Image 1 (tube, helix red, strand yellow):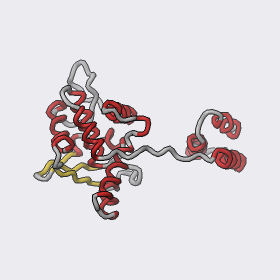
Image 2 (cartoon, rainbow, N blue to C red):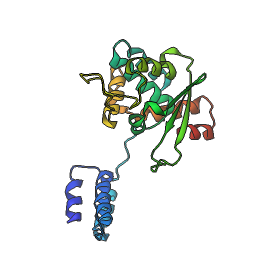
Image 3 (spheres, rainbow, N blue to C red):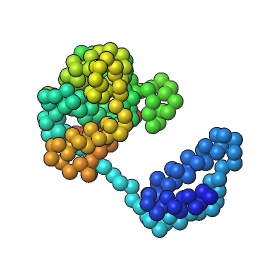
Image 4 (cartoon, one colour):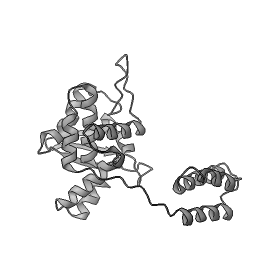
Length: 231
């Protein structure tokens, strides 16, 4: 049955997506104490699909500093624009994934004279949230792309009460802080990039992370320093 399901899904989805579906079915069976249906026939079907498709992973283009300045310069005026600028600029400066951006809370912030620090509790390589990881972000030399100023501008609108850091702005009462989802973060980043006249089909939230890594390497930062910053 799982082999038939896999074959059906392969008609419209990428192999890597169908592999994830199959692994999920196997995981749920094992968790509930049943034998996993992820047997040799299923693996053979997936291997055959990989050989036939030879699919290449879709890579997002890294966002350059020049592009970041263009994007940030257009995000001003309205509360939504100020929030979105903070998301884009802080996302670039911290190089954390969009799931981590969506999960940030005000309590994870610590401001200091040099800028601020963010506590990343859980991420891809630390799913249990043991100890967490602190990312330090200094003031930027360019006011347009300064992550500290962008975040402070957003906090003037959001307030400094506990709760999710990046929130929705469609709350009629204005009393509750509703977090943005991962998908919402993705749409905001792509929309901001498209609004700056850049072809957003080649860019996404991961472009902020890869853009920081690329620009840091071009600037001469050592691989160890970059690796420590991006986790």
